Length: 342
Image 1 (cartoon, one colour):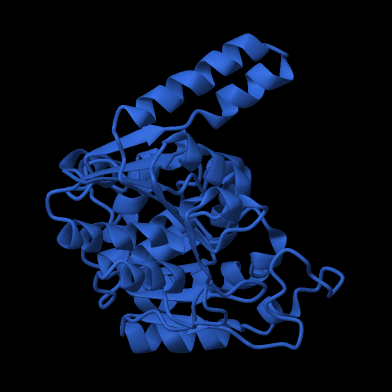
Image 2 (spheres, one colour):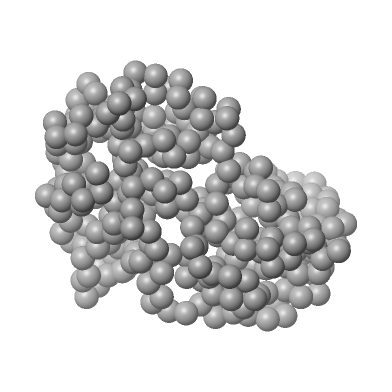
């Protein structure tokens, strides 16, 4: 039996997009054992997927703490234990979906003879038996993962995230949104990321939330991570009493369930925004400093993006904090797209 290892450790948005590969790999290798190696904070998104046989967790933070405390022997034992855990699987094929040195090293530990690196950098290509170079400026959703699917002889059509929800996930978020009128529904706001150059102006989120309430009776549900809790509350308070702040109050799976049941999602370049494509939830993505895709493949998804000579700047903004590419997206533009979707 063929055994396949996938390595995509983080981040949430990339794991969401890479999940699009799973059913295609299962159809390409119907009898294979397929295992995914990921960090704890995103591992829950992969659980319960019928195409996956196991999710192995890499405890990155634990290893980092052992290193910082100079507990080198214990760290070495942890490395050897993971190495043995991976080698016990007898992988025939291992695929580094992340392309970094850390992901390449972990993949190399597996002992797989065929090791494919997707866009390998930081020297990780030397650990691979073959490297697939990413096609630059491909506008399609999950372009690099579609490229890998083709390389392996799998299909790359109807390429959307695959996230599996349980009844418990749906019931939990339903309880947290018990005050929402089922008839009018709610819109999810996903305004936060770890990089400020991806953010839309806060006053526009407020104005948009007010307009959605007035025009469509849509309540705003703000989602985000634990570090976004205070910002989420400030945004919800500014929008008005109808807004609900769930930033930092849900698990990733509960957040996904909230998106799956929403009438609409509006968000910046973050994993929560990409999730909407997997649930066929109408969505509006606000891209600027980054634009992971310009063609979603879905008629229910709209991308607001204004090209500048400096965009996408990714991690190197050159506009002195103005973030002109995001400032160019107006409330009126977003509302026009809301009207077309609803």
